[in-house]
Length: 223
Ligand code: 5RP
View 1 (cartoon, helix red, strand yellow):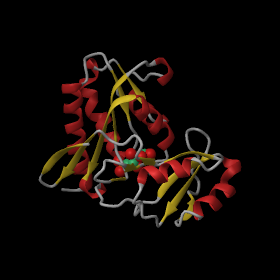
View 2 (spheres, helix red, strand yellow; view 1 turned 135 degrees about the horizontal axis):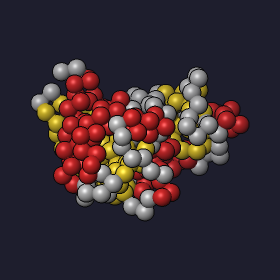
View 3 (tube, protein in one colour; view 1 turned 90 degrees about the horizontal axis):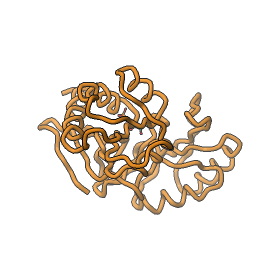
View 4 (tube, helix red, strand yellow; view 1 turned 90 degrees about the vertical axis):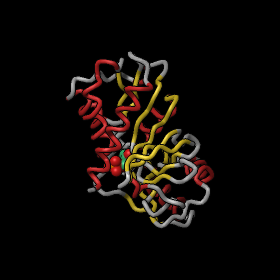
């Protein structure tokens, strides 16, 4: 199977999970990226039972609206049953690296509100130790040089993502060459650097459920 076929398969499994578990009329959080895009296309078929969605990026909001799916402002939502999103890496403790698409801050905010975080990936994303995928860090533009110097002290190589401006008007610095053996500790440490908006480690609030597309079918892993 191609990687896109695996993403399609896991998107279908996530649609079935939502159809099964999200009470009719409840709010669904929707992530960003190519796997999330497959998921959006799948939930068009069940949009009648979804009360509304909260999008983790402008691109996701546009795709949802293109299917006639209602998109709400997070501030108008009291509770959200399920958030479905992809990841760049996920370890066996269900911690993730996210932000390959640059939407990490909004993704982390939406995930914080959701009761259940469902991560959807193909098997290439499951790793023993994260860090091969560069860790994205969203940074206030005037703090770029300061944050770059501070990130370099952590042992990796920070590189500005050229041409990238986030939906929040900020920059992304990708930290290459890390070996992330303490995801929660590193997440907290990077967030303490002044000028960092958020970083792409989702360890403090990891996934509750992983739907993992493999050649043998979609596996379900619980935290
Ligand atoms: C976007 C993300 C995505 O979930 C992550 O990059 C995975 O993307 P894809 O499904 O395209 O592999 O965090 O900010």
